[in-house]
Amino acid sequence: MASSTTLNVKNLAALGAERLAALLIETSKGNTAAKTRLRLALAEAQGSEDVSREVAKRLTSIAGGRARITWRRRKKLVEDLETQRRAIIEQIAPSDPDQALELAWRFLAIAAPVFERCDDSGGTVIAVFHAALRDLGDIAMKTEADPQALADSVFAALQNNAFGQYDGLIAILAPVLGDDGLARLARRVEELAGEEPQRGATREHARRDEIARRALRDIADARGDVDAFIAQYDARERTIPQIAAEIASRLLEAGRAHDALASIEDTQIKDVRAAPEAWKQMRLAVLEALGRHDEAQALRWRIFEAELSVAYLRAYLKKLPDFDDIEAEERAVAFAATHRDAFSALRFLLEWPALDRAAALIRARRDEIDGDRYDLLTPAAEALAERHPLAATIALRAMVDFTLMRARATRYRHAARHLATCAELAERIADFEGLESHQAYLARLKREHGRKQGFWARTIAQ
Image (cartoon, rainbow, N blue to C red; front, top):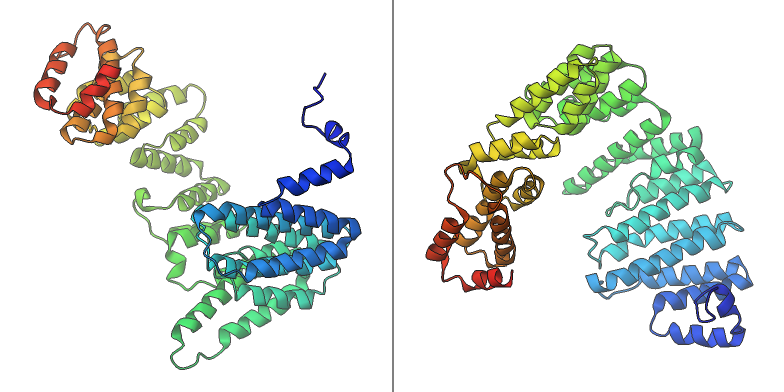
């Protein structure tokens, strides 16, 4: 049975309205977000119009702010914005979608003044605006918005998208814009692109041209017009692998697989290592759609060989008949184990996993082991310690040696831990295969690095 002091609705309600009100006033002191929520709750009790006024007033206040929003204040800003966003979609939209739509536009419009004084390196602020953009689409579906007027609003927004708050706007509103709205938007965008630049306004003209081309691509996507989408790229741009992949994906979706393949091949990529991931995935999809499965398999294998990609090897093996995959896997692991880049090989062998091969690689190519690669050597040592203590020791010693030779004091704590692990592993190593014993290794470290007291103090602590 819950205690009478447990924080739940029943226990709090027992305090009575007046006592609860006093507690809310007290706890909301200095907490802007809490105060805002209380005001909105009071306004909601009077009706959605009062909530709308509160939200509008707060949006005006946020937009008019002048103080720099540091990373310390950013969390409070996000909470404030989220409170206003939720009020629009949850408290206003259900009873007055037209008013909610107007406020959603106003909310998105304050992005520019907000970002002008706010660092959003973590992306938390723009995430709120993107959520509001999705809300805009949901709200618009509940209204009887005039497609022509909505197209004009979209057109205005696209010209003020310096911070990306309107990215995806056309796709989100396409169902509400319909054919008439999209047609009007296309005309306005084309007029913008056709405007003659003023003297000396080259940069502004380039900006308008990019806005227009992006918008026309989005409109083409909304209409399902592949050729209109392609027309927004010139012949040179269509040979850029990333763009060619975008074009090919639309052609394939439209049932034009041969045209999609032509788009991919126009890039004339000879080495798959130079190809972006989107291009590789698209070429595979096109080849499969055309029934050219052997070519698709050959491409998967080439990518595996070039990148030692676990994902592409798994995809390759999955397409093979039963039992053929066992032989192919062994061939792939053998290839990876002899790869020219020891660390690429080690990463693959650990991820696959093929721990026996990984251990053999470390023992055979220990002179190539770079102790600065702690990001790979640490998990390698952990994975190999149980069954391959010598290989794990080689990895650990490489990191210890690098740390001491370079006097990386920030790593002394880790190096001391690695050295202690080496001592434990030594008890299980019957043959050091030409490596120093642990005692000899420890003695050498003391001779060569005995003055690094910061390190040795940590080994004592171990």
